[in-house]
Amino acid sequence: PRLSPDDSRVMVRESPGLGDDYALRIYDWSGAQLASYPEIFGSLDSTNIDSWDWISNDAVLFAQDHQLYRVDGLGNQPQAIASFADLDAFVYHLDVSPDGSRVAMTLTQTRANVGGRSNHVWVMKIDGSGLTQVTTSTTREDSPTWSPDGTHLAFRFGGSAPPGSPIPDNCPAILIVTPSAGLIDLDAGIGSAEVVVASDGRPVCAREAAATYNSDIGWR
Image (cartoon, rainbow, N blue to C red; front, side):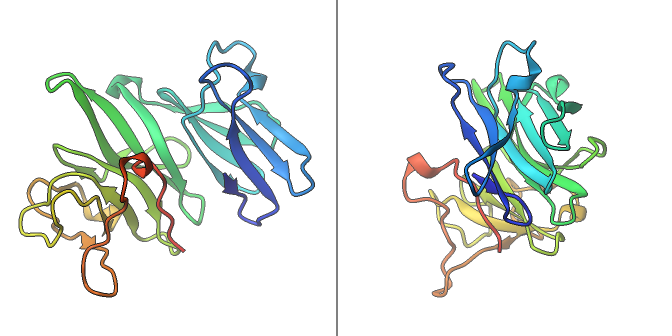
């Protein structure tokens, strides 16, 4: 679930009884349903929602397969603002910046040469322009979240320890970067990234069991 910026509404993903497909529903605290997506599409064969977030109290952003949609005014028709089909990428872990001007995300691309997928952090303007890759590696980075002032991103790094870093192997560490600093190649080291550590100085591992690997990270 995601709370609206003023905490008056909650947006959740629910199964509308269509197997593995999911829809977004928005409720107020009385339990009244204010909107539902993408059931209002009508013409779409799939209603699976992969990720979602609030832009403002009356505007939302959600990803479906290769597409990113924006809704201005609850109950209005979603408008496609970006497609990642050319990158063969699916969109996960949307996180809108505190000022509503940008969105961070995980783009998951097929890696046919190794028979797997790559997951990296990207940033884009909220109108769908200015797509920029923030991280890269031969493993994965995911679950970006903005700092409260919108100047930094925290994300989970799920690969082997970068050269020269204090991160132990098999520890999905949380790193902090400045998106404007340019592309960070974690195969070459952590560069300007900061490793989040606990009070004892050891790097924080973002999970203890594989079942929680895809959960979001929050920054308050």
